[in-house]
Image (cartoon, rainbow, N blue to C red; front, top):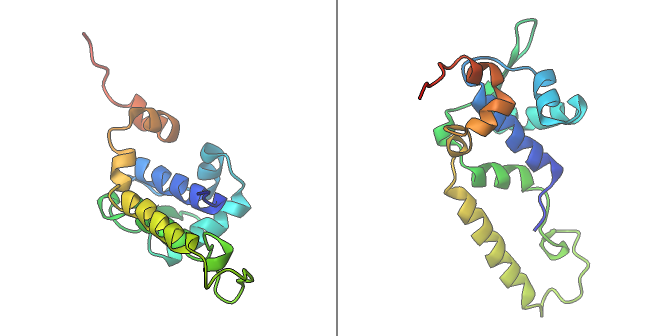
Length: 154
């Protein structure tokens, strides 16, 4: 199974917002940290906002924050929402399916079950599990927050 670039970037954006949950973040800082273009990012942010995963605030002091707590966002939910318009194979594309085997195919139901198992596994993973306690991620996405923590002395 291959996920779209849009889904990959969506998860990066959500993790970045989660890692910087104490403030509004900007599109340009996400683009720099997540190694993506601002144009592509703008489309992803817009879609995540429409889906309720993000809250966007326009204007001079604007920015982006999570639309709801990290503990309420599952990875499976995000993947389903972002990938919903992309069929896993041609035979799942309503109106665009040209496969002559669709009525006799025994592979199609197996693919459907495997896809559902994939999403089911991701339904058990929360955004907070990807961010909270992940010091390596915080060093990449919120280094100032990491550096402001007191150092532990042995």
